[in-house]
Image 1: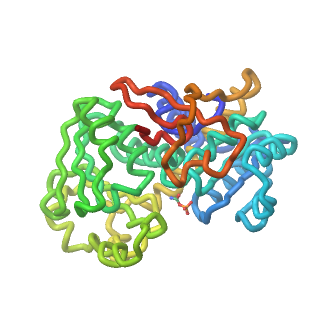
Image 2 (image 1 turned 90 degrees about the vertical axis):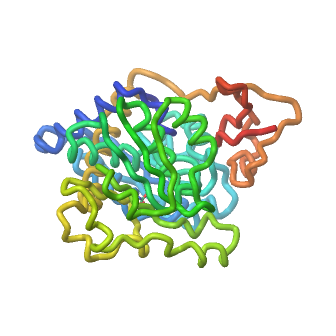
Length: 357
Ligand code: CP
């Protein structure tokens, strides 16, 4: 655990340990109030955020540490063309750990290979958002007491929602999980998730467009926002934006102990009338996100004192380029173009995991 780029870089044992630490922080906050005294967290946010940035900052303050913050691309030398690599090297001179959000897929990995301190991916384009998944897992754990034998419905934009892909990958490692994937056909889960994660792990799953039909089976309902910023066509976004709006009448067939999660921000997909339903967990999920980030900061700073830098798996292939227009290799010229082979023989970009021909 040098840096955290993707939730699947963490073993089930490491996730269990983080959950245990987070639960201990919830029960005994005073034990941790000086744990990060004299340590500094740098939050580098090149894309908008409310929860992730503020929860990282609240987490560090509650551990007795302090925070240095870049809250937009325009307020840093990125606006003058400074590379991610140079930013990471520079911030390593001031801080003990970095939490970074960036619009490019693979940006946090690029930062971690150049930083001399741990880097936490706080969202890299449409690629990964591991600390959101850790917050989701802690919420499920606190609500259900574990992860086994749950029927998990995931609804909304399953194509572009980075939290969805990470959550499926994380939950797929627990016994007895079932997924119900609820989305318009245009926004269904990408094949690399259904084939490469769900089917590969022999997880039972169904895909449907109808939320109410799926509702009675669900233990967890994970609602998501339609990701306007990832659409190429505004017209297509307008057509799909209100595909699902969860209102009290739609919960009539739901289990009494259903837990409703949402990574937030919500736009229109959960009516505010649901907020007072005891099954609504999304604001608790926000609070759990802070505890999970506290656990992660503690663990990574502890590990950093023992070990060195992040390395990237993969090899150089002559003339090969990543075709993902949002890949970090398209803006960071000095990054070596590296590729790796998956177990089923596909070749993928080491930075953003896009399949190449
Ligand atoms: N869930 C989440 O990542 O929220 P923010 O974009 O506000 O950080």
